[in-house]
Every structure is written in C-alpha cells, then in structure tokens.
Length: 243
View 1: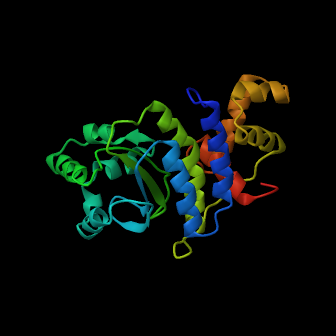
View 2: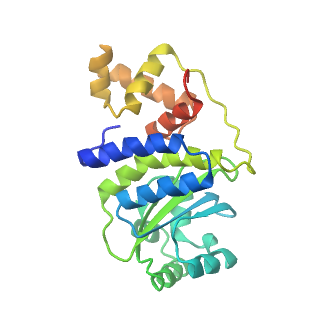
View 3: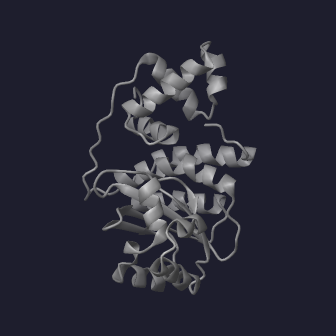
C-alpha cells in the first residue's frame, strides 16, 4: 500500500487494525476493532451491515442512534438510501455527499434530510463486494464536516480486513470462497504488501523490476478473487501460515 498523505501514526494504526481484525473471533471483537477505526477517521457514530441493495442480512450496531436505526430497518430505508446505492454499485470509499450527487432523486435527498435530525449530517462509507448477501458496508457519521481524502485511504486499507472478520463471526450465512494458489514469488510480494511496502520498495527488496512487482500484484488479486490489494492481503492473512 502507498499510504499517500497519511501520518506515521495513522499508518501504524492501520497495520495494527489489520492484525486486530485477524484476531476477531466474536461479534463483540468486530465491534471493538470497528470502534477503533471510527476513532481513527474522527467519526462520531458507526454502523456496519452485510447484504445488498434489496436485502439487509446482518446489522452490527456500533453506536448509531437506536431510534433512527429502528425507523431505518422497519421502513426499509436501505432501498432508497443513496449511500447504500453508491456503495453497492462502486464498492469504494466515498463521502455521503458524493453518493447524494450520484443519486439526486427526491426520495434520496429526503432520507438524508431525515438523518440530519438525528445528528447524522456528514458521513463517509466503504465496503467490500461479495456474491449474494456477502457485500458489506461500513458507514461513519459526524455532526461536523470533518471527513477528508485521507480518511478514504484509511477505510480502503482497513475495511477489507474487517470485512473478513465480519464474515467469520456470522456463521448463519454461507461465505464459501474459492482461493487460488499463489506462487513462491507472489507470496513474497504479498508478504511485503502486507507490511505496507510500495511497489518500488518491494522491487528493491526482491531485486526485481517495478513492472514485475505490479504484474505479480495483479496476479495475486486475480487469484484470490479480491477487489483490491488490501482485500488480497486480508484474504491471505485469513488463511494463516502457508497462505
């Protein structure tokens, strides 16, 4: 990962959160680690869900207003939520304002206006794609406009690890995934990717060209059926030693 624009403290916390996600064994563990991510992106509230745009399979409440969640779930607001729509179409970290610009329909704006009455005025969200109900969304909110581009990079680096943790602690769902076999060189590249090294740094450590590292990185993502480098790292870590 390149971690452009992030401080040393943020990078260290990202790496620690990845390790903590791997150690999650219960839903309470996931809540605790997600709470740390919430603090890292300077949010006030957070909620996590598995599912898709038509059905919410699992909701993990971190500290969202209970009254709003009751209204949201009972009213099936996810069907008209621009943040949900944006997440499950693009699966990349985004500001709530970006989602509303992408889906400016009146019912979408009306829902966001309702959310502000509960202090949920600004937000940032991200998730990982998955078949069926395996897609995730991690949504963070604040009453103040404090989310910046670097917060997107933080989510992009950490959410794939938390996504894997969430799948592990939800035994009621079917989460089977085909994982390809990695070559020795791909495992070496993946190891250094997991330690936060850039493609250029990996090329120096392995004495291979920058383009060769990029080639291996693309193959790793393809073989592991991952959505990005961070997701590939999370999948490999989930397999344990010998992955």
